[in-house]
Image (tube, rainbow, N blue to C red; front, side, top):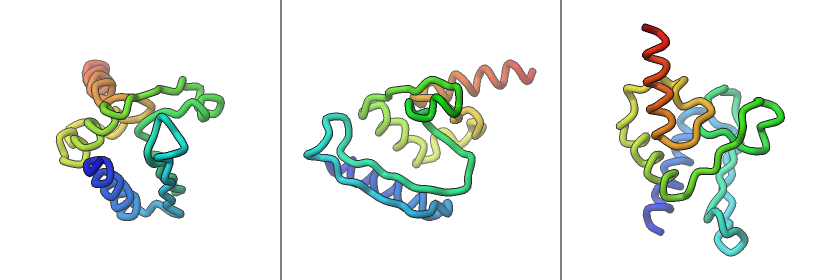
Length: 112
C-alpha cells in the first residue's frame, strides 16, 4: 500500500508541475474492486498515456484495461526516467509500457 500512496503523490505532483488544472484524488478503497484511488485532472494538453473505454466514441480507438500491477510497474519506470528515450507519441493510446515500447519500435521502422 505504501507504494500505491507514493505513486499517488508522484502523480499529483507531476500533474501539478505539468500545469494540470482541477486535480482531484478520489478515495475508492471501500467503493471499488478495481481501484484504490482515481485521480482526475483537467488541462489543455493533448498528451495521453492510456486509452479509456468511455473515450472510444470520441477517439475511435478501443479502450484498454491494464491490471494494477502492470500500471504501477510502468508508471514507476516512467517516473524514474527509464523510458525517456521513447518518443512521446509512442505513449499515445496504448495500454501497457510494453505496448509503448512496441509502438516506438514500429515508429522507428516506419521512419527508416
